[in-house]
Image 1 (cartoon, rainbow, N blue to C red):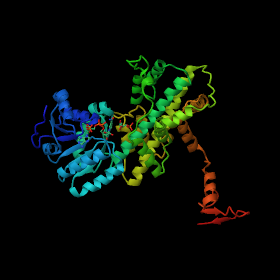
Image 2: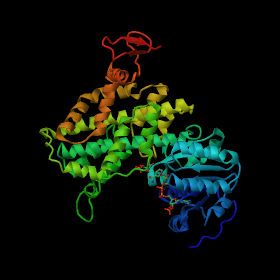
Image 3: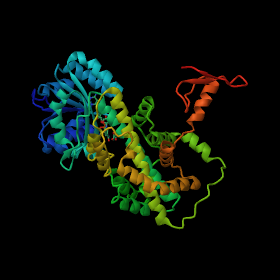
Image 4: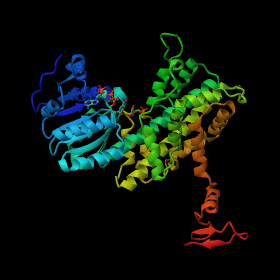
Length: 486
Ligand SMILES: NC(=O)C1=CN([C@@H]2O[C@H](COP(=O)(O)OP(=O)(O)OC[C@H]3O[C@@H](n4cnc5c(N)ncnc54)[C@H](OP(=O)(O)O)[C@@H]3O)[C@@H](O)[C@H]2O)C=CC1
Ligand SMILES: O=C(CO)[C@H](O)[C@H](O)COP(=O)(O)O
């Protein structure tokens, strides 16, 4: 099918990039009665979409960016869903040449929020409203209802919000879409959403590894364990799909599918950005960091092979006298670690919101993550409740539901981390989450010693516990006199 030039000003909204997300989001918009212009570098993707799904609504294909922009009714609204980085940059440049003042250009991809801020500045003189919108839910979410995280001015949200809310997922009648804050905040929040996603996926993978290689369950038995966990506080999309993956047998080999998948994990950047931004903000996100590092470690194949070749002492397997009790212990460790990961993500967003003056409603964020997105989970209701009760809650773990669950799971959590160490199963996210809790609860951290070391080698100074001021000890002198620097 060749694309004939579309009628001018015939579409309500346009989608640029008809790949996994763009095709499904365009269908979702069309299913909700919006006339949707579509364009892709490969026009065949547009014709294919119409051949297969043209009966779902009105699609207006364009052969190029000129036709696409002309087909949009003014003031125009277009959503970019192409890979972050250069492709997004190229599309923005192409749209900036063709759109007019007052039009709205939405970047729905996983762009880095500092790029978004720079792009908004660049477009400001044109009068084109450039806004960012985190979109989560993968292919299925984009089609049946994603979680949408738009950033931008209130005036622009008033124009696009109703359309976005019409296609978003709904939980208890609440649309999984909210105006997050000014431009940049949408992509920041989506970045941290993905950081939490990395941590949750890593924690689930560690639970699977322990069940298999420490407890000794088979893959079908582990599938049944995950299936049972769906009716506990762990109930979530990621537990659902894990159950499905573990229940899948490879057609070619008859082996569990998980055993034929190469173990180098991919990543497109959002996890690493979450960690980098958290560190820049001075926010500890050890579970997100451990998860991102685990993916990098999986890709360090030469290093992995060289260590595998060493004749290292074997771990001492722990006798598995009571598999049921260990399985329950691992469930509790997973819940506790997951709570820590979410606490870290919310801490990062709260800090950025404060520093950038974004005024993000964290409770609302928890509500819009209950449906549509990859981290949708039953326990987000508890996060929303906690943040509604106390919007400036400094630490999620201090809210009653979370304190109660951390307290009740702690003994088994410690047992599981010890099991992992003794059986040689790597559980970096479980272990670092427990370390996070123990560091937070410690009345005094060993960082006092680090301060003393810093002062010793670099005169970096220290503060004292017993009086105000900034001090330095003259370590090179025998009697170590102390100076007061301020
Ligand atoms: N996949 C997912 O689960 C999710 C992805 N995202 C984000 O959404 C964005 C899109 O992802 P996804 O749909 O998976 O990516 P895909 O690669 O599946 O789709 C991108 C599409 O955009 C096309 N494209 C590239 N450059 C242009 C251009 N200049 N003009 C028009 N079309 C262009 C690509 O064509 P070609 O292939 O020929 O280059 C491709 O068809 C990314 O930023 C991604 O990070 C967000 C949430 C979930
Ligand atoms: O945004 C998403 C889900 O929310 C995308 O699926 C994202 O691409 C996943 O990240 P990565 O490819 O780095 O695992």
